[in-house]
Image (cartoon, rainbow, N blue to C red; front, side, top):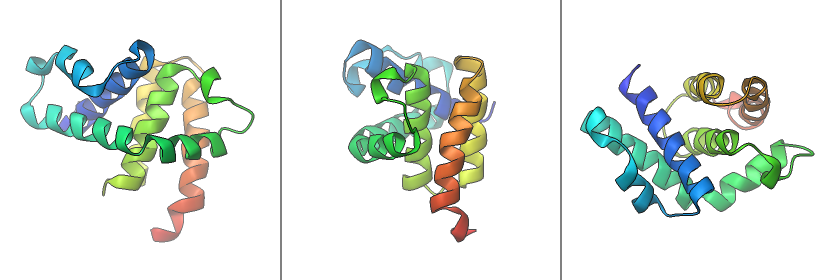
Length: 136
């Protein structure tokens, strides 16, 4: 797994932990196994999680808009973390949206329910179509 892919996995785990433990990023960051990853990987993961948190209100509004008929409280916590991370990286980094979309789908296949990859693909895919496709 690439450094960026590992960073996304760690960032997803941090966002997930914040959601289920109702805690802050600093506490979650202290609990992750940073020694198992390169410093660059950990730093990018923290950056992604921090940016997602800093823009959470806007990101959650996008998720609500695109997850028609799904209340945010009903979303699986892993799916919510992946959607937040995906929209964060699409909107606030220079990572190509195709890479982000693929990575979020792959993470959902590994860490979430069987149907999650379709759900994540549907929401992020529609968002990308509406907002990013004109840029390519």
